[in-house]
Structures are given as structure tokens and as C-alpha cells.
Length: 402
Length: 173
Picture 1: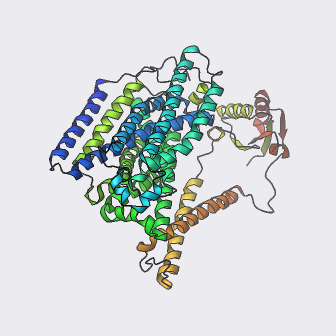
Picture 2: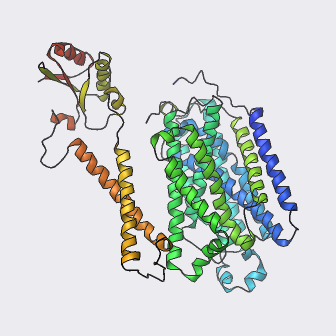
Picture 3: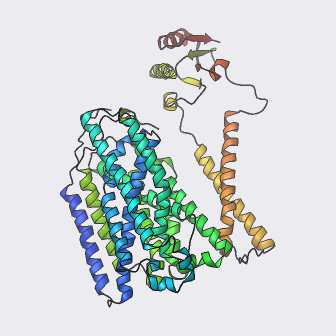
């Protein structure tokens, strides 16, 4: 395929900007109404903080898993997704912002500005034997130390690899960089494999401080992964709609659709494995987590689970539907929202107890974050050519056919 | 019906075979079968093979497996002899459903996988005691063979076309 005739400069059109602005505007409006509808009691303030954390975790997770997926392409020497590289990079470039937000939110937690993590409060720990036993791990120094180290390494790899990608474009030599790219990607994956799990314990699991699950890290990982894949798909469709995605052919779309399909099942499998074992064994120290969700978030919990399982299964099973843009768009849109709901259900019962629900404020903050995230990512996409040059596998990827 | 000639063109390279098949196709000659040690990418549309139905069969087998497992667990654990395992309320099917999901999943996969394999063997007629349809044992090693059935008068033309597209050996039966 000849790349000379393609328009590889993406510009953020005023129409796209307008959509982002509308999302942000509507989101802001809903948020403000949601905040001032209620009296500003402690639980309302807690609600605002929890919502901020839901969105930080969701969108930070997307950029982190985009980085993971990008590293996988190098480590596995995969050729097919080379045409998606710049799209992935644009999502990855949100990582510095997301990481900074995670860090700031964590520091504010340690400073007791908000009370997302109960174990950070010494008065609660003093009266709680279980939290005292866990305090060797669950303490502010450990939390901040690990958060800083993890985020620093993620950020370092993301920054380096995005820069290397631009350098290869400029200096015309993708082959000599190949080995470095591959080993660093593999190193990052090893680091990521351990730390993403530990990170999810600190950032999400320890909100329900008494509860623990060995599967939790993977479950969070799978949810964030499928969300990242959906974002790649949606950006690919956006480019196609603008008439700029000639380098994404039907086979690329088919494979990205397959990822969406497959990782949805990985997520379902892990979610259900965690739930089923806890439900079956019925052990007092484990079952509290699901009782809190069962009692106060039952409708949301099951809707979220069935939508995230059944919609991709039924709608993306056939080969033709994975090649159909409308199907990918609809399924991507639906499960993107319901994976956000999944993050919501991870956090809210722990921080809000019975008071949490999906109201105007929650939807508003989600739309606000969506608009901001889309705007940021698309303006990053506009900063580089849409297709990498001089990558050793670019020709193979352009001719990809399944 | 007139006498038919069966021609075998043997190639050393699967890309050459694809070119040959394309050539025959453009001359409106049907390639009856291709024998190859491995699946050749992109050969299906050239020799006019439709997309396989095996994925749809697999889906049906999977649905069957799922239904059988649900029926089995319902009959054994709820209807015939309500079983109380670990205090789980098995007296309604839906309240104990999570416990039945793993076996349902396994049964679905089992039926889909085995059904698909058996369908494949039947469809290709690869069964114990069946003599191989393979015209040349070298196609199980490093040769690619194209089988063409044609009228007697076309025979010379086809042999020429096969040779010109790079067939290393052409046999006529």
C-alpha cells in the first residue's frame, strides 16, 4: 500500500472540539446541579471526592493499559498493530496527567483532606485490630512510596518509548533501535506485571480495608485493558469517519474487534471467578465486600456484569459484526460506560456505604472527564503524523490480511 | 458425457501455485482441489471455496452443551434430589445458579470443541480405515499439488498453463 497519497496530519476539527466542549459543558452543569442540590454535609463532600477518584482511576487506567498494550506489541514482535501505534501513543500521553492526579489524590488522602482510605486515619486504626495487623503494609509511607516508585517507572517508560518512536521517524533507522525497544518493553512488562497488582491493592482494594482478594489485581487489570482497547477502536473509527484512516484496513478492524471481544471475556471470567468463590465459600472475612454491593448496589452490579458480558458476546461474536463499524461503535460505547460503572462499584460501596448511587453528579463528572480526556488525547494525536515511518514492520502491517 | 481428464500440477512453492490457480481461473478453468502440507493463506477465494460454516456449527454445539448442562444440574441438584451444599439454597434453580456456571461453561466448551472436530473429520472424510484422497504423498512433506478435472480437448492447454506458471511436475491421469 502506498502511503504517499495519504493525509497523515490529524487536525482537531472545530466540530470535534465542539463535541468535547458540549460534553464538558453538560458535565459541568450536571456536576454543579448535583453538588448544590444537596446540603453540603460530610457525606456529600465524601461523594464528590469519591467521584473524582472513580474518574481518575478509570482514565488513568486506560492510559496505563494503553502503555502496557504498546509494550506487548514490541515484546511479542507483533506486526499487525503497527498502524495503530500513533493512536496508542496519543492515549499513552495521558499517562503523565493521570499519574500526577493519582499522586495528588493520594497525598491529599494522606493529609486527611478526604477520607477515601479509612486505614489512613490513626483513630480508626487504633480501634481496629485487623487494620493494626495490616499496618505493616497499609500505612501512609508505604502507600506514597510505592505509588511514587510505580508511577515514576510507568512514566519513564511511556516517555522514553514515545520519544523513541518520534526519533525513529526522524532519523530513518528503525532497525538499530529494535532491540532496545524490545528489551525495554519486556522489562516494563515484568515491572508492570507485579506492580499493577500491588497498585490496585493500594489504590482500589484497600478502600474496603478489611477485605482482600488475590484475584483483584487481575480483575482490575482486565477491566482497564478492555477500556483501553475500546478507546483505540473509537479513535480508529473517528479517523475512518474523517476519511483519514486508509492505513487501518478491514483486517486491522477485525483484530481490534477481536481484542475487545476477547478481553471482555477475560474480564467476565475474572469477575465471576472472584464472585463465585466468595459466594460459595461464604467466609465472614470475605463475604462482606459483596454483601455491601448486594444490599445497596444490586441493580447496578448485575446490570454492569451482564452488559459487559452479554453485549460484546452476542454482538461481536460473528466475523461480519467485528468488521462492521456501526457494531464496533455501539458495543464500544455501551461497554465503555459500563466499565466505568464497574470502577464506580469498586470504589463507592467502600467510601459511601449505603449513600452512594448513580446520580446527576456522577454522570456529570463522567461526561466532564470524557470530554476532557477526548480533547487531550485527540490534541496529542494531532501533534504527530498518524502513521509511524521506518518501523521495521510497517510494511507488513500495511499489508495485513486475515 | 464425454471422457474427463484429471491433471495434477505439482509445485515447490505455494505462491507459484496461487499464481497458477489465478491463471486457470482467468481462463475459466475450475481447480477441483489443492493438496498442501499446510493451509495456504488466501487460496480459498482463488479456487472458489466459500467461507466455512464450521463456526456456525460450533455455535450450535455450544448452545446444545450449555442447555444440556443446565438441564442436568437442574435435574440432579434441584428437581430430583434437592442438595444442600455448604448451606447454599438449592431449592430454586436461579438462587444456586452461580454454582452451576463452571460446569455449564465446561460443558459448552466440551461440546463446541468436540462437535467441531467431529464435524471437520466427517466433512473432510478423514476417518479410520478411509483410504487417503491425497494423490501424491509428497504433498504431506514439501510439495503443493493442484487437481484439475477437465474435458479431454482442454488437456494440452491446461498442461501448458501449469508448466508456464512454474509447476515442477505435471501428471495426467
